[in-house]
Image 1: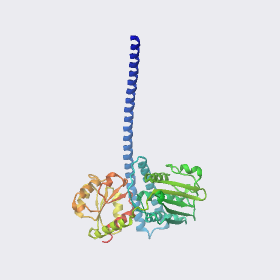
Image 2: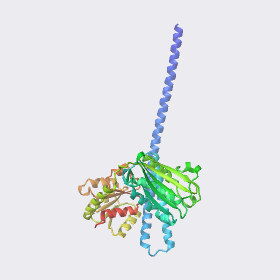
Image 3: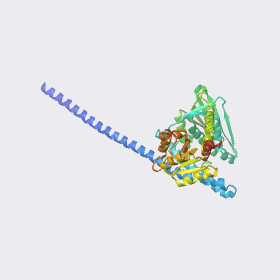
Length: 417
């Protein structure tokens, strides 16, 4: 009997030793996984910082280049030969293509990392579609394409991120125009489905179409489908992948129907309720309030920027339209000039020496007389960055600056002066 008990105890001890060894091994593996996870998080932060830096460094010279191309075209329009005009068009188109590629890579990276935040607001559908059509109209007219828009009268407004929905529709309609032969047709249909609480933006064309075996490749990043027009249209292969991810982040999706030689229908589905509030009245009230106070503002722009190429380009552009400008090249200088000159509008780059632009804004907002001063942040970062959203700025101008957007700002604050 003692021998049996002793054997049982030895077996229990062996079992305990084995379990202890397994526990130690598991703890070691957990520690290794935690260390690997920390390394991955650190690598992700480094990647995000690198992408932000790359975006800034690439957009900054692009901003100067595209702005100066626009200025030179305006100034020299009457003396340029047709060949010189074509050279300007090629330079501008190449710069815009590079900008689109940079933006798409950065946006796709954010989406994959789960760091893209949507700014949901009431978006008026009719003016949104009009803007989208205007952006592709020139290319469509060059190919003698017919463009049409049909809207379900029940769909007045949707709750969505206006910038991102516009981005999706521009991408879909641009593709429709690119891959439709001369003399064809493209269009947009807006359909409401209240029973499913859904709105559909159908972008259709009479283009080359897509073969069924190529459908699985459509939304893969950096993949372009070969067809008779693909060699004529340079692209990154990112647009559809990015558009689909943006649609899904809204709680929607993009569906495709296509037949080679007949055309394609890309349907953007988004959540929608017939009760969604229109943005028109709110926007009109805001604009009226701004215009009512505009005459009290001094017609002067303070440009806070340390990149000399951008200083030159933006100063030239503002001067061309009769808007005086003073320049600050450091954070402390921006503070001093704002207090001394009392500008009607501040264009603030966030990467200023000695004191960054966001801190300058914070200090200005702490002074009563500058609480309502219109400030537009100039940045290569996306507008959904938390620091930017909490900075106290009124507007965000991404690099390269969209000069049409800058014009709207000038009209908004100086139009009655």
